[in-house]
Length: 487
Ligand SMILES: NC(=O)C1=CN([C@@H]2O[C@H](COP(=O)(O)OP(=O)(O)OC[C@H]3O[C@@H](n4cnc5c(N)ncnc54)[C@H](O)[C@@H]3O)[C@@H](O)[C@H]2O)C=CC1
Ligand SMILES: N/C(=C\C=C\C(=O)O)C(=O)O
Image (cartoon, rainbow, N blue to C red; front, side, top):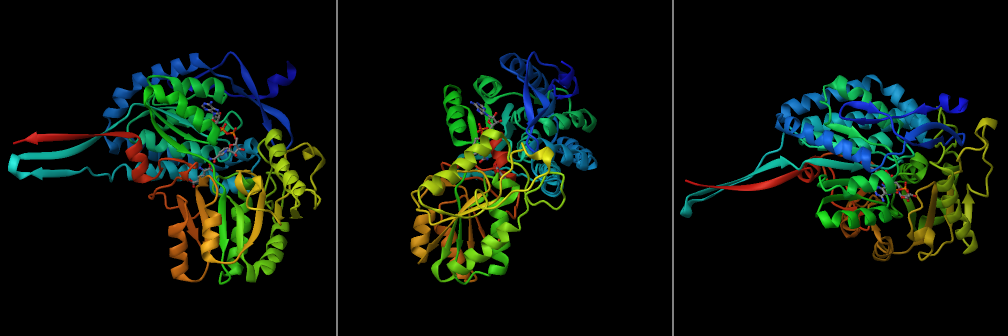
């Protein structure tokens, strides 16, 4: 009992009020393996309450002009920015990522998400055509869909949650968001800013808990016509099944098995540090991370030597260490899953060039039970291996050689996923040619993760359905109507 009192205890935010829950889930600090927080274990009753609040708030919020909604979003961005350091500290503790990443990427991007959609909502136009022979004018109008159900994962908690909340609100919907039960703290902190920013009660409701309990209650609710989800493919399948009887609008942003293709004319000075980052940023827990590196044979040995050297400099440290490049993985179960892939690779006869099982990890005594592992490079592995086919979602990357452009395109496309790829070459023609042939929703050439938020973001094949971005998110969170006027 005494220990429970010291734990941070979160509450649901429904209808503009913080409400306690009947039961709670333990949430762990990934850097120590200790429980430090209690997250509401919500279910159907909490979703019913959130639907009621969102339904009541919808007429008022949807009737506001885009300019009025834009002002509220801008105010929210300003408030979040004022508390950037507090949010970054909380995100690093809750997720295990480095404070540097939380400070420079996660929270600034969450601020940017609100600012971006506050601005983009002001610039949409509608279509209009004339039919002179029959004297008709046709035009389109867009209206918000209604109550939006938003489900986000644990890897980029506030960054991905706000990437959904901001466009849904901007378009005039009311929202019920369910963050991951593993990383709920910054979403709860955001709730405290909502009234201060002028968000009316019920416009944004945040309900915490597990996928099977509260996630499914949200997805199955008949009054929630639109679901935006980022997470794993099996969960997306379940959401699709539950949504089918209601014909819900779905946006599914799922995993990847992202290739980096490195041609012999690549600028290795730039390519090597960028590929270390694309493989191991955020502990490799980003759906866009590189996990298959194809290197042209003539530079294979040189690349491998320099890549391993650079990987060994990618420092694993506790999240508060400003010199760390990588922190702890999200959970014990996830750490074990990631390690199991390295074991499988070894059993198949692959070589581990650095990291897990090869190098020694040094951690302060307090963090020995944390979920840390070293960035790991595997080679001598076949394309058919599970390490080359399945999403590992951790600091593990495979490096293999290739001969020709045609061959590497075929091999890069030979997985069920199609999210992101990088191509490294100084031949402009080749860069365009290869990018066009890759089955991938995003291709970065001679760079990685430079985001233009206006343009479509999302994957092909098993990497998802739909796109997010200025126009794409607006289209998704609105219904279009064609009106014909005979004059
Ligand atoms: N964007 C991405 O590509 C992500 C991929 N993953 C992949 O998924 C694997 C498993 O991670 P998880 O956290 O288990 O991902 P997940 O897909 O289960 O979780 C994502 C979100 O969905 C919710 N959820 C889970 N089951 C649900 C259900 N039946 N109905 C409604 N919502 C549900 C979760 O509570 C969480 O908020 C990772 O190892 C990684 O490979 C995980 C997170 C993000
Ligand atoms: N969806 C994910 C990353 C998105 C990044 C971005 O929008 O810039 C993910 O890792 O799940």
